[in-house]
Length: 444
Image (tube, rainbow, N blue to C red; front, side, top):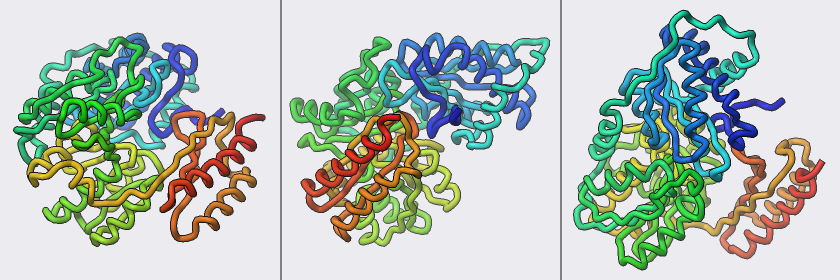
């Protein structure tokens, strides 16, 4: 059996892979494990996104927490980074989020943060997983409690407003909330900063999260920016831990471009220690070239904002992120926060009196082709044919491109990414590798 926890918590199809029984067990196990490493009566801040399965999973998770003697602060529907933030300011043992982020509505997940707002270490996740299979622990005489959130939401919103580099007065912004947990928060923050905000896809019904909208489809907010004649667009994913943007012409601005612009600005402000920024292996080749030209060192990790965060702590970096729109501003957050990213990027433009297109011009994006190959097994190590196809592509590209082939940590996919100065060449090489991946890993 594989590891239950993936790169971003426990995920699967709600009711099939992720059941109420499993959620209850995770709640009980987390209380036992965190009780060993901290206070005897752990307290959890529990939040969720807008999926219809979130309600019964929340009920089961909280029941497990209470059975084992832990307390649960009920945050309701809130962005994932809000739960991480509240875990720290409320002195909780953990923040727990019921969400599958950008995945379809049929999926769901449970991810844990430590009391310091960082994602739980692999070791603690392994300990929780082992506790699930251990003999039942005698429940305490007194069950845990459910507690109200109080002013937690307001504290989070105030924190975001305080992070702005400048007011957004005079700026018109379209916000795509992906029918997810940003629906009740992101527009409010931008309005408090003075922006005129037009909101789309902020009517969640439990089944429409991420459906044809949000950070998976940033061209949608781009088209709305053009239709309305707005200055900018922001697209969140279902749990609002990422943000992508559109400029006034509707062109999409990805996480690499946001990271590049913020890195240069923070260097100029003296807020980029050691002139270092952290990103992943998926970062565009244009990002690396732009940072080199700006005298900024790039440290690269494997994909996953948890790994970016770990490397930032190791190096003392204050900025890191992913092309997908997870950006971590360590001065204000412990994890990727799409609302904070929107505040920082838009207010950077406002402070400089420039548009988003000018900010994004900090780097030239190389054409990048990504092919997602559905597979039945994700072990690339023994796939000799795939290694050969990658070697062939790298020889063809030479110094003008690169290849990354990796297994998704959250879905049954292998992602083939090829960059080149010529898009047709990138697509040809990506498709050639994808065919071999399919042949070796999609059956048997």
